[in-house]
Length: 382
Image (cartoon, rainbow, N blue to C red; front, side):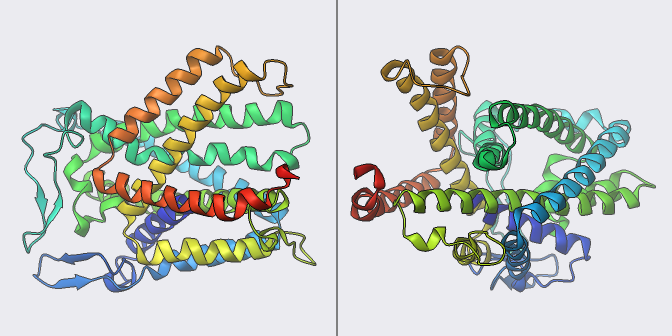
């Protein structure tokens, strides 16, 4: 969840800059590991992603203030973003150009995209960059979009009837959002050619406004509305991720897996404020200094690997603990669990080698922390 929040805050920065007409200099909205040569031949070198840090700070303060206020703000944001997305799908459907969907998959012989200095921005030669392999690789990259649904479970203690409310909340939102994802992507890539979304000068990740203003004459207002809705939507996603992780830290702290500092509550607001501030520093470091695609790929790996473990864990518990009380029971457990683990593993394979190397190194660090601190201090051992 922390890396997911960092990834989304980086995308939030892109959309904010698009909304402001590129008023934020490249240097102050990109990682120091990113550079780009524009159409005028000017080289831009990133320094820090300041807008990403700003949104993280604001949402951290909101979470410290309390979950009731956070939930109210989140409900408003969700309503706005869903309404705008539905409006775009309805209007944009009439502007779909069938030739933009031909071929439907990226061809194997697609030339790499470069900037004015010849630097390769996107390369499609790898097996997981074109054709059905590209579909698998693309699914793995955007898989972190589904991380927010499991975060709902971290707020189970605050639900009136978690046995009924949790499955409805998670599965219901999962179905609705998946349908909206598919329809939005289909309409957007039908309105504009997919290569428009690779060009940094057109906004790259934030090219939605460009596509609408360029190919949907008379709907300039919709371009602005969609950008505002996406900014609101990203804000709610960051909020849920930060809230979920702070609650995870709070529970882990009570179990002795991490220091007690993570579980200390604010004397007035009764929220785990120290956990929130630690999260801000950690997530802010990634958001401000790490390129978006790197943070996104690492988030996807973490999410996919976690889902593999959860899927296998469900099956193992069914075999070893058949009589344990199960408020949430997965139907056809062996089949669903095995298929879930295999599909997630296939998408992990679809990620690039650099991402896998960094991810496994990160996991190794986590194991070191566990064996040197968590295992020894866990209350389960006492």
